[in-house]
Length: 579
Image 1 (spheres, rainbow, N blue to C red):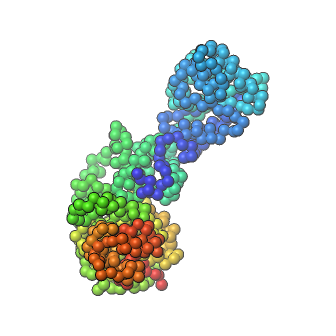
Image 2 (image 1 turned 180 degrees about the vertical axis):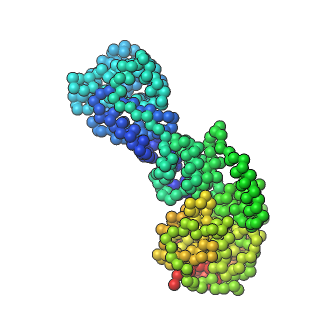
Image 3 (image 1 turned 30 degrees about the horizontal axis):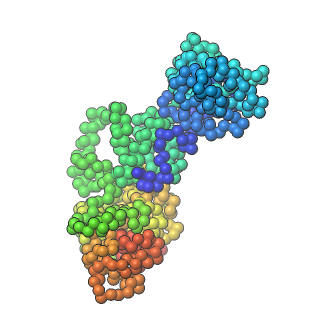
């Protein structure tokens, strides 16, 4: 569900013990070294214990992937077996034949095993038996396993044995009747959970394997993840998976502490969540009350309203589409349902419009060049206002259009505006250069909330951005260190536009589209119903889309309309060059 949202090629936090995802902390490296010793030693047992979910099975599968070609492995996954069933499982793993229709004695199974092990030894091959979840072994089976170590030559043991289990296994082996087995354990290690400092590397490691190298989890989010999971990898995976889902639902590409807190309540419903002390809660309530009184227009104040929406939902959640007249044409309705995937992958929401303003053409020239303040190499700490530069970023883009935005409403929040519309999307700098419009970027630093910048130019190799009224020159790497792909651009919609324009539609938006394509010599002029979207218009639109490297689906959505504005003789704001 969230893979495309984050640009992942697979789920990074599956609880399956996939060895390709293994993260080797210092503790896991030591445990793996003990396992490797078990493959190479000439006798005795190797014992690895650890709490549930600490990564024992993942380590084990990683070990199996590294087994030498001259070694045979018998991997026992279900140790809740009788002595006879254990020996049969060992024979099955090693390819040793035994009669199924009749039951052999324990001695007969041991004889077959001994002959097989001697034969493989003569071929310079060795054999190791690995038992996972060994805490489930009964004392009788453990004693039989000890007896298997008696299969030997004068020089070496014929069977190497590795036991992996939960801490109860160690307690079982401490029993007096199993003291002979305990004395044959030549190496043992107890695997503990990850340390607090390992959480960052662990999460980043798994995200990187799935194709995302940018920071998705904030520092405060990682701290809470450790507190909720105590560093147990399986619990980290469960919680982080739920966090990514929560971020996807909330429309953000950054996981902060609030998302982790909500995810923890859903993933671990029986675990108590630490409450704030009463004094802290009262102090926070007073601060919130004062903040709401002083900053009623602050978009982040919505966080403390009666709504359960998060900051990220307020900042990036797409608005509801404009109300349109009911459509009784079933085929057209079905086609409309596919609009979200017609123009390109991750087609953004485009329904909301900006606040009412005067026509931009009368304010200033939107293509005017400017001189930035100075070049910088980091964006951290540049935002100091309470709304993290949210309104200032939109003001910068409005000014690029030659518009003075005096509306008290939040940008893109009101569907009653008439001039510019908000196009929210998720992409990269290449996509923004193709759109060629000033954009609002959602950026992240060490704060739990995003800050915002207006992207004003794409003069390679540098970009010019504006943060809270200050203009800076940065390179692509600097932006990418703080930006995870969320953007908003303003664009002019055709008259009467309220949905993607396609075959069978009628209205002034179709007439506008026809006129634009005619002006570009993509469509022959016609005196017939110019407000009807026919096959000729669809074919002309497809040809235009191909020329602009858009998906040639014959549906005029925001990206196609933006490119039509760019190529036609229409005054629009474009990304400006730095002098």
